[in-house]
Image (cartoon, rainbow, N blue to C red; front, side, top):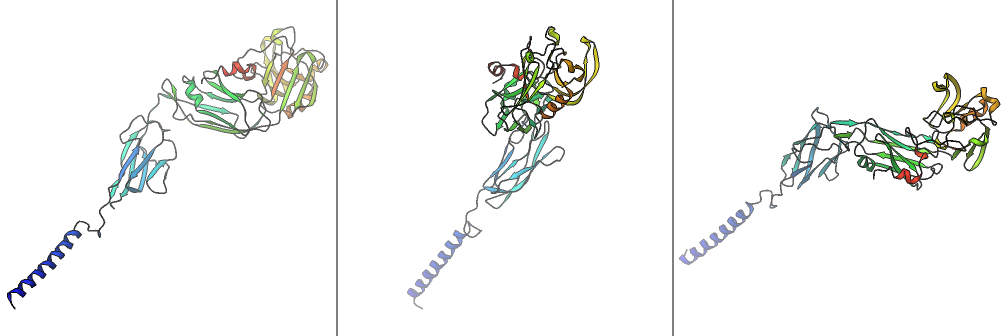
Length: 384
C-alpha cells in the first residue's frame, strides 16, 4: 500500500474514533437515557417545625414541592393519629380535626421528589396550654320546636373578659331574613333575639366557634357548639290584668279566652307585673313556696312558668269563685283546672306572654329578661 493511501486510512479511522468518543462523552451526563435529573422534593409545614404555643384550632398542613407524598402522619405524644386528608394530587395534607391543648405533635412519612428519590417527613410542634378553659352551653337544643319569642342563649361556667371576641365567633342563620342582635345579659350569658317576634316556622341554625378562642385572662374555649331548631306556630298570650281574662292568639286569630285571676292589685309584692315574658318551662305538677306570704309545698297542676321571679300560668280550682272577677293571687295567673290543662297543652317553650294593665312593671333582672328591653336598649348590650 502506498504512503498516500495509508495516510487516508488513518485519517478515516481517527474521524470514526472521534465520533464514537463524542457520542460516548455526550451520553455520560444522563445515565437515565438522556433526561436530566429532576429537583429534590422539598417538604414544608404549617406551623413550622419546632413551633410552640400553637393554637389547636389553627389550620395544620404539610405540603411538598417538586414531588408527592408517599405517606404522611401526624401523631400526638400519646401516639394517637390525627385525622387528615391527602389532596388528590398528593402534594398536600391537611388535618380535618382540631388538635388538643398542651400536646406535642410529630410528623412522620416520606415524599418522593421529581428526581425519583425519597425524603423523610419529620418535625414536631407543641400546642398552647391554657391557664383554664371555660365550658359553654347553648339553648334551644337540637331539633327543638319553640315559640316565636324564644331567644338563643349561650351560657358560660365562668365570666368572659373578651366579650367581643366571643361574640364574633357566634353566627345565626335563618331560613328567612330575620333582623336580630346579640346582647350580654351578664358576664356569663349572651343572648340573641330578633327585633320583632320570629316569623312562624322559621328554621334556625347557630354556630359557636369557641374551641381555641381566647376569652381573655388566660382562658380559652373548651368546645365548639352548634344547634339547629325550628320556630313553631305564632301563639301569643294576651294577659290584660284589668279584664280578668287570658286571651290566646294563634296565627293572628283568637283561639281561647279564659276567665283568670291575676296578682293582688293593692300589694306590690303580689302584683303580676307588666312586661313581655316567655314561657320558660312546663310542669304537669309544680310545688310552690312563698314564705313571705306564709305558704309552702302547695301543689298546683298544669304550670307554665313565664318568669324567674316566680310567676306561672297554672290551675287553681280552689280560687274558682274569683276567676274572671277578682285579682287575688300572689302574682301567678290562675285558671280553672280545665282551662289550665287546655292552655298547657297548647303552649310551647318560647311563646310570648304579654302582661298589661298592672300596677307595676318587671325590672330587667335574673337571666331571662330579653323582651323587657326595647330594641335600642337591647342592641346597646352588644359587645361589637
